[in-house]
Length: 116
Image (cartoon, rainbow, N blue to C red; front, side, top):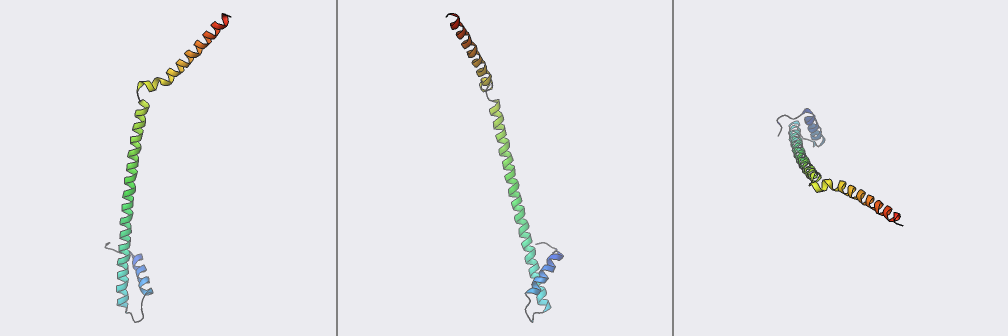
């Protein structure tokens, strides 16, 4: 529990205590009720801070896990891009093969037209 309670909390607790004050209740009793309310408010604030810290830790852990997963995926992609030599030269090989086929077609077409 916090050692010092803020003035705002004390003021709020006193307002609440006076708001629920019964007739015939002494100032001392009201003061004791006010102190109990102060402790309750302080305890509530402490619990909320703990929940916030825990949620922040969880969020940071999730963020680290996501970053780690992203880094692993990036490494996998880099490895795929590097790949083996075959996949790197495949597009160029297909281009050369298609041009060779086109040239062969033209030569055969011209040769068959010349023989007619």
